[in-house]
Image 1 (cartoon, rainbow, N blue to C red):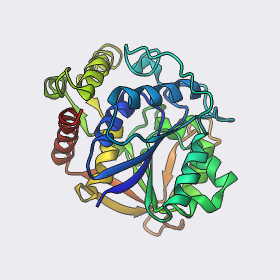
Image 2 (cartoon, helix red, strand yellow; image 1 turned 120 degrees about the vertical axis):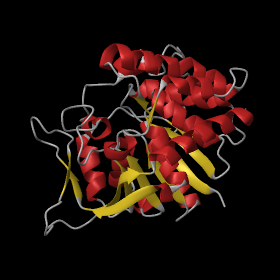
Image 3 (cartoon, rainbow, N blue to C red; image 1 turned 30 degrees about the vertical axis):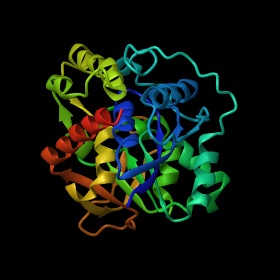
Length: 313
């Protein structure tokens, strides 16, 4: 059986890799790609989502949801690691699709069409899900579960010393989602940040003659070059691709029931994910969290998914 999913994303390079793996995976039925601001602006996120799907031309076209600029989000972005448009040196410009429905509307409509069947996979800030909670909470209750790429439990952040980018960008939205009763699975940097690849990955990508290979060969070299030049890193984590791996094969990850909240007001701790890890926790558990995984198997799964995308494109 295939799993029906919606991918909520702020398409940078990592997101594009995750979308490539997802759109051709026979175990997944990607009903929609809903854009959100984060790595890039809302307008650019929508353009990138449209461009990635169009370039890949998957066998089943997902619906596209338009990102809306968040009201209280951070002024930061992640362009210094993803390029001026978020996709390396791939310049796709702005979309002309002015009549796309908003992302939360697409999620709500699909949730009602497939009650209890959809997994919402959040690869970017949680703005769209929080908007849906406020505007149409009944639709949220129709989702099967929510899988979130975000947060950090026992490791440093990547947007600040303590905060992961997705939660840092829109901490108010993240706080609402964490506090919600929806069934949640969290993939923090503790595990996703460890799914790292060396430059040898470029030699294992699909042929440039395939649609998947053409996209990947245009965006991933930029990621490795920028990581080396700006961070002094030789390995690049594919955080969002690791999150998709957790949707496809959750048994590769070790899950722990935890109680988590998001700091929204701290001067130094904005967007920090805080977990009650006392001997006698006082907070009620509200999510399952993957802290470790079989990293070799997860990385192998990512490589195989990308090669399969090349075979089918």
